[in-house]
Image (cartoon, rainbow, N blue to C red; front, side, top):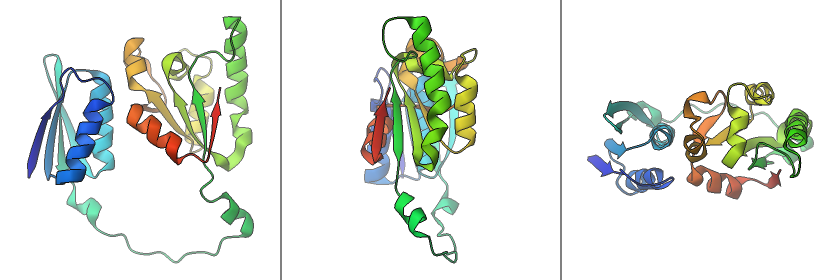
Length: 206
């Protein structure tokens, strides 16, 4: 089965939601989504990938055609591994997911120079949360933290290398004309944001 969906002119996260609904309801072997902005292209491509599709993208003028082909090998069950017995401390940490939600490039309000310094200190201190630190979401002007030249970029890259998931709002990057300046994290959409908030066991808003 092949599915084609025209998402021209649809704002985030509508293209991803339409893609999600089609995959969940029809499970097509092939799916084609037409979008008209970089953020939607990135979000739809990544979502298809998480669903086991081999993704290809073609640019046609101002449009992007995102194609997904079902990777049947991804559906093969993996061989079971022998499980180790966890300690009480390890068991207590299972499922502990702390999400940090950033909606500004500054911490606090008042003086922007002070706010930028405080944000750098805040991000530098996040490793103190230990293994419970699961994900950082950046929306609005906070997406600037993930772009080249920002003082916080190196600290965010270190967090990502340590296993922390970083999600950067694609609509926000597009608004600030920074899609090609992002240096860390995955371009995300509101579906990912809402799902992440639902899955987190603790949310820290800064």
